[in-house]
Length: 307
Length: 231
Image 1 (cartoon, each protein chain N blue to C red):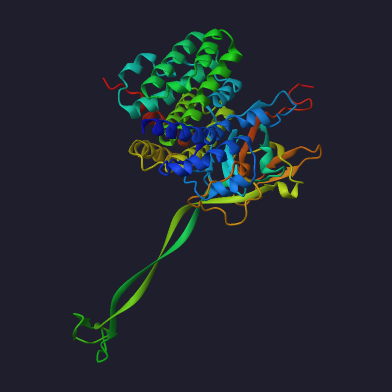
Image 2 (image 1 turned 180 degrees about the horizontal axis):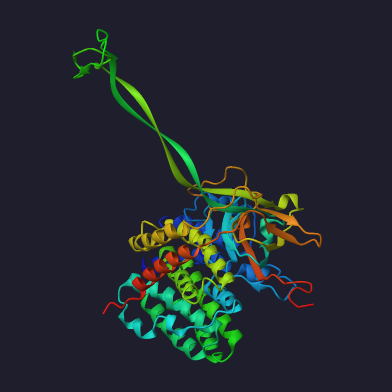
């Protein structure tokens, strides 16, 4: 989902003669051919289409996976947790628009996962509206919108389309080398899923959900590592400060037990591989409440209206 | 002249388009070319990724795997990159480590007030009331190393799987007992050692480039046996 460095395309179209020589080469590259003409062309070409070496990509589970999980865990839908679609008009600052695009995208996934079709329709429209404002309308092609409109009553299709639209945005931003904006959107989307989960669960009753919340320490690590690649962007730096504060709260969760054997792949008797060993991250009620407070604080800073 | 410019722009566009579309062509490569599991319970995981690689390139994909889930990770690649790919899985974690940090500084060199025999005082030039071991500056400086122990957070990687020890298999299926942050390291053989620097005036040939897809699938780990049936 998140790519640290995009493929570099230096567009140096200075030497006209070189381009003319490069034409047969380009035609050959698209066919995957190889012959002596290629060798001659190499001398004069000034354009480079070379993938960056040792790229590092950071992936964050998409909102629909998290909401699928909380649905399986038996947590119910709570419409009061959504950021009202009425607020969309009040976000005029580009950073706040990008952040709230992430918030609304997660809300869209939440409503779709719980088959709240009326809400899904509203949130799909809101996400499209914000996409237009932040200049990524092109990510939503016409067929996607048509499919969404035609399948608003079909739960499975709706989740699929919601997911497709999320990854369409990710692809679009990656292709257009807008990694900073993608980081802002993804971080807000992740935060909204955590916000919904933490405000939907009961620490003493919902053990699976509590464990999944503790595991978000790992997701936050991925997110911060990705955003750090774009910290020179002032908007990313601002958001990074908020999430660094959240990391401090997550950092208090228990450290791995060094006495337990290291993590490893082991083959069970039935031939199935198991990734086991090591210790899991645990979370006390006090830590749970501290995370909840911090998540609520950051989320409220994002969704607060500017009017 | 205008005609020439138009031709040049057209030629430039023709040159650029195949290269740009090549990169975009990789976008959903994993969905099109990696074989999904035959087990219909597996679902496409959003952490799947495709990217443009050149021979000799190594890249990493950081993903999360959750407890009580089964995962299947498969790798596929364009034919022109060969038929073998190196694929390793590491666990990545941040750990707190105590580190001794040494700081060097220059300080005045001192010498004892040799004529003192008690607790003396000094203004660094003269010794007064010398009844003990006072000190005074010699006028020289010496290097002093002070040590401080600090707790720093370090990223550690532990190798969990290497497909070179598994017949260069391009897929692995496993159950996760405890949630982990994994780094999938993908290396495309070839390209020559030390070819990691870009040379101006050299175009990587498309025969040396191609798409690599990493398909991640997941499902809730099935509970087997009579567990929970009450019998």
